[in-house]
Image (cartoon, rainbow, N blue to C red; front, top):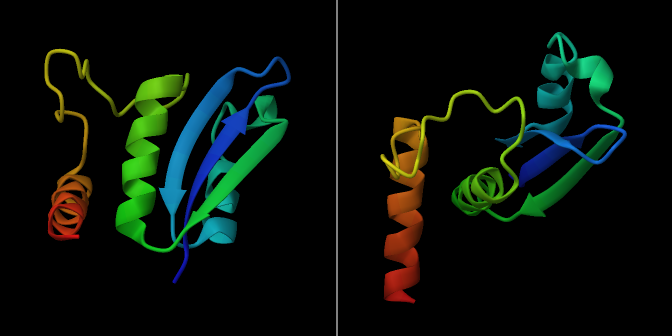
Length: 102
C-alpha cells in the first residue's frame, strides 16, 4: 500500500498541518471536522513506497515547516524525539536499520 505525506496550506501560504497516512482520501475527510479546516485552500501530497519512508518525511517536514496546527509536538530542541509516537519511533528505527544495511 502506498503511503502519503500531505500538507495543508492557507491562502497566504502558511503551512497549517502536515500529516502521514496510508489512506489519503479517508484521512483528508477526517480533517474536515477540525475548526481550522475552513482555512485550508491548498493540499499537497507526496507518495512514498513505504509507511516508514513517509513517516521519516513527515517528521522532517514538521520540523522544517513548523505547521500551525501540529500540536502534538513538544519542544524537540530539548527532547529530540519526545513528540513522536511510539509507532513513529519504531518506524524511524526500522528505517535507520534498513539504511545501515544497504
